[in-house]
Amino acid sequence: MLLKSICTVAVVIVSLQGAPGQADWGVIYTSKNICALKGSSVDMACTYTYPSGYTIQTTFWCKDCTQWIGENPVDLASTPEYKDRVEYLGDMKLHSTLRLKNLTAGDSGGYYFRFITKTQGGKWLGAGGSQISVTVLQVRVTPDTVREGDNVKLACSTSCTLSFTPTFIWYKNKHPLSNTTQNLQFSASSEDAGSYSCAVRGYENLPSSAVTLNVTYSPKNTSVSVTPSVKIVEGSSVTLTCSSNANPPVERYTWFKHNTAVTSVRGSGQSYSIINIRSEDSGQYYCEAKNKHGVQNSTAASIDVQYAPQSTSVSVSPSGEIVEGSSVTLTCSSNANPPVQNYTWFQKNETGVWQTGSGQSLNFSNFRSWNIGQYYCQAKNTIGTHNSTAVLIAAQVGENQQMKQSP
Image 1 (cartoon, one colour):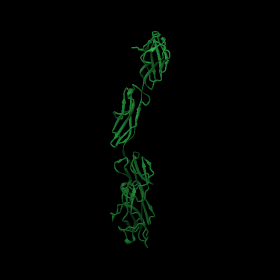
Image 2 (spheres, rainbow, N blue to C red):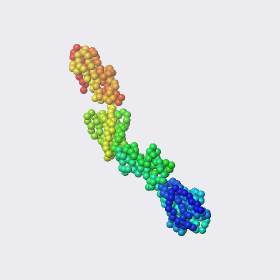
Image 3 (tube, rainbow, N blue to C red):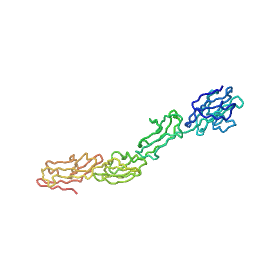
Image 4 (cartoon, rainbow, N blue to C red):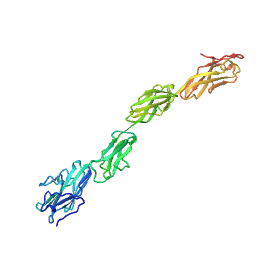
């Protein structure tokens, strides 16, 4: 009577050694081909038969040892590179399982079961073996060069087909994504750029190496900042800086000034500075950012140069002869930014100077001789003050008096 076991995978048994009859000896491997991840563990199992009346003395597994006919193969568990990674499971009668831990690339190859009985010459090496291919996960990106809007495919690939049906995990910048398929496909945008890796569920500690997805695109989000950003006073210095998100980076910045219907080029470079800024520098400024994929203009930044009153002058109405008893209005005009907040009137004659009124206009409803004198106005805003030149108003009682302006 022979001791035999039924196995799920039948293979051809080649007798290397044995007695009394080869038909009484056999090894059947349950897993013929195994594809496993580097760093993982695998189990290789077999069942074996031998003639009735024989008793098993020892069993072990060896690697790539079918050429050792007539010799004694080396037990994996006794070799330095395997002894700490090998575990034997089974009943020592009909079943054996080799558990190989922490797989390395060098573990690829054929593994064979060997058993020896206590009977002289009663030993057997099972042919066929379990073939192991050790692989790693690798992310492949198609196409090689990606521009915004391109269709992109990221594939989590292995050099052999894993021996189980895997569920994949994708990571972007080390954060898991919701996709669990082997491939990621999408229309690329600049936000998709980053570092991608993949893993197999249950083997999250064995991820692929990360691959960087570089998405090129034309300039976007182009904007202008102004320093200082608060009140810009005439005579100060101002720097405008252009910022733009682009890949590859912006190659050229160009600055433009726009006033009403006129647009002019003012400079180049990421920053544009105006030293000793004047009122005529006020206007709308924008920058153009350009790389090999395109250009984009920023929105305009308004430069409003503030200055103290200037060109302050006095006008008289009526502008002709002034008759005693008539009405006379003096009006103060001044160019200022921000506009003039206060106007103050002063009169001066031989006896001195004194304030005689406020507001943009000074009115005489009944001009008299004691009103004769020189008049000037002072214009004031938050930046400073400016005085007009004096206007001389002279009159004689009962006679027409012509307005004269002092030199």
